[in-house]
Image (cartoon, rainbow, N blue to C red; front, top):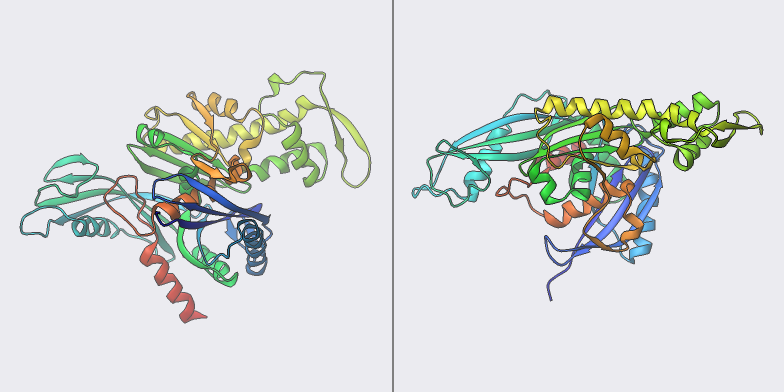
Length: 411
C-alpha cells in the first residue's frame, strides 16, 4: 500500500484562525480532510499579527479542535502569510548550461531560478516565493519544462513575491510559540488559488479575488502560473462597519444583518421587504427597508471589485483571462456577490469553493476555508521544492531557515 502523506494548514485570518488536517496517498491524488478546527482571531489586524499572546492562544485553540477531530497530534504546519505588505515583481535569470553534453538538468534549472532572485529588495523585506513563468533555451522562448532539452544558454522569467520582514518574523514566532514547527509559509492569496482554482483555469488565465475580513487578495494567473499578486486594504469588515454606522447598530448586529439579509444589488430587492434592526445602546428595534441595507453594502462591494479590476489592468492581462474571475473568501458569502463582480469585470464570474477534497469536506467546503484547504494541498504536493513545472511555486525554503536562525540569535 502507498504511504499516506499528511499535511496541516494553518490559516491566520483577521477574523478567525483555521486549522485543517488532511491526508493523501499520492502527490496529485484526492485530498481527504480528517480534522478541522477554528478559533476567533483577536491578535491579528488586516492579516498581520498585532498581539503575539492572543495569536498564539487562537492558534492553540484551533489546533486542539482539529486534533480532537482527527485523533492525531499536530507537529508541523503550512502557515499562511497575509497583509497589504505583500506584493509581486517580475524578474529574469540567465545561466550557462553546466553539463558537457549541454543537456539541461535539474541543477541548471535551480541555478537559473536562484539567479532570478538577485533583484533589489529593501533591507526590511524578504523574498517569500519565486514563481517560474517560462524558460528560454538558446533564444527559444515559451518553454514550460526545460529539463532534458539541449542548449547552451538558459533563461527564466519569474514572478517574485516579497513581504515585510517583521510581519514574517512575527508569524514564525507565533507558530513556534504555539508549539509547532513550520514546513512552509505561503502567501494567503496563492493558497486560496491552490484551494479553489482548476488546472484549466490557471492555464487559460483567471483572476482570483479572495475577500477576507480585513483585506482582499488579488492574484492574476495565466499560462499555468501566477503573474501578479496584490493585497487590497479593504475586506468584509469594512462592509460590516458601513452597516453599523449607517443603521446605528452594533458590529455584531451589523454582521448578522449582512450575512442573513444583505445583498450587493439594491435593485433586486423588493421595496416592501423589511428587516428588524436593534439600535445601539438599548433594546429599541426598528423595522427598516431591506433595500436600504443593500444600498449600504452595494457601493463598498463595488469599490472592492473596482480596485481588483485595477490590479488586473496593472498586470497587463486585462481582457486576456478567458476563465474569467473566481471570487472566494468569507467576504464572498454575501448574496449577489458574483453578480456584482460580473458587472465590474464584464466577464464570467463564479464562486470559488474547495475542490477535489473528500472526508470531512463538508466542514471545510465553503469559501471561508479556501486558504486553509489550499495550504494542505500545497503541503501534500510539495514536501520539497521542484523547478521543472511552470505551476510550481518555489517555496520558502532557505528564506524560512534564515529567519528562524535570526529569531533564535536575537531572542
